[in-house]
Length: 238
Length: 361
Image (cartoon, rainbow over all chains, first blue to last red; front, side):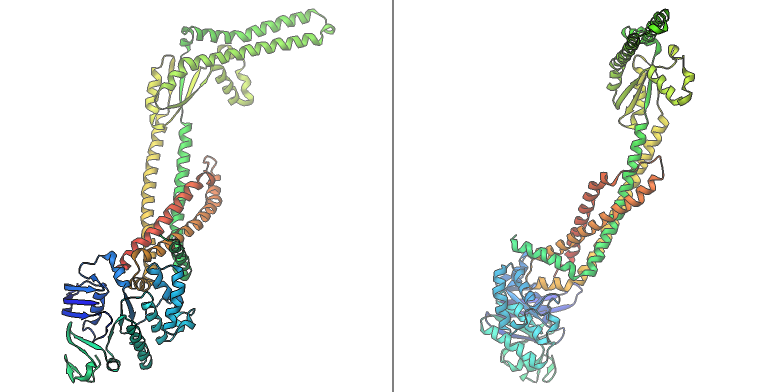
């Protein structure tokens, strides 16, 4: 569950990133957050994960008040969110199994739980046969699936995927998106930040468009059906 | 903390050392080099202190007993007279026995008589020794006790004028015969040799000694004492300043080395933080790694230090006859404590301090 009310963010160097963002995402939703570069998408993700603090406004994520959360409680908030990055962010010196198990260890799971859960999750993403290989021995799509496995292994309430298909070919991108859709069907809220219009149009989901730090559109269905929204033309890549 | 977490942290720390071999070796080498410098310096300081201690011990005060006081002091005078009479008695008895012997014919000298002579002579020597002991006891009782009461005196030993003459004779070696016949009019005095607890007290102890009844003259090398104190003060100051500078340089170098290690692993730290790891979960394996690297560096440094000290410093000092070096065995525990303490602290603290900026994610 996400609630942002009148959220503004101005970075320390004076750069304005967000102004007056109002956003409501309920549990179990699948939402695309789209926008051009420097539109403020990444700042929203950073605010939701409490990586940066908002300059003004109010916010709530999975029951944690973003205005009042203490530094010591931030890890707890992050455990309710699984994050998938464009560049996978896997630890190259650990095997696939260890990369996923590492996320469970970080939250204090017992070795017995880890042994039981990790193979199951790797099976869900179709990589149970590559448990003992290292990330650099996998294709981009496979690495992203490992990242998804790591994001879901602790049963988070919400998955935030920040440009998850940015480094993947179209076929792999669809695969990853289908995987996220499957996870969503199991009850997890999914927020996908992307600028790939074909992909967004392929899945008939809620799409929130952002431009220059403001939400310019929030509707269900393909965002690119209009010729021009928020200064963008139909065939432009956001 | 749960057992499986401890196992995990230890395993992660050890694995990480081998995963980042080059950086681990670099950090270990830096710690080792710094410890070697600190250790070498401490050993030099220990040797200087040892040398100063030796010289300090040799810097003694000598107090001479007044000749007249002996006779005025009743009992003490009797002791001295008895001591002087003993050889005469022995001589007289020996002469009488000799006369008896000459009166008889050479053939009539029996083994029994010879035995009798030797027994009587030995008895005379025993008497002389007993009197000497009584004299020493009297000197110690009347003057020695007063000396020991003075603040700053560590110990005092008495030498009678007879003993002094013997020492004098020994100093002459083979030519000691020239002192024959001087015994009856021994010009030497009874004396007390005083060792100080601290060389600093030389002047005050000398002044107090002069006040004691029966002490005629006191000789103390104040100039040496003062020079020694100056040398000692300067050495301590220079050593303290140099060790402090060395510690600061070590911390700076180690913190930079750790910083480079962390920079190489910032991505890993950021991932840990994003998946909800607490600061301590991220920190502990790095601390374990830092401490282990530190301890390994300390072990190598200790072995090298040992070798350098035994085969270089001790060998070099042995060429200087007047300087005795302190054996490594005597200093090894201090070195072990310093090496392992400093390395673990610097390794662990270096990791904690440097990690702080990487944890702000």
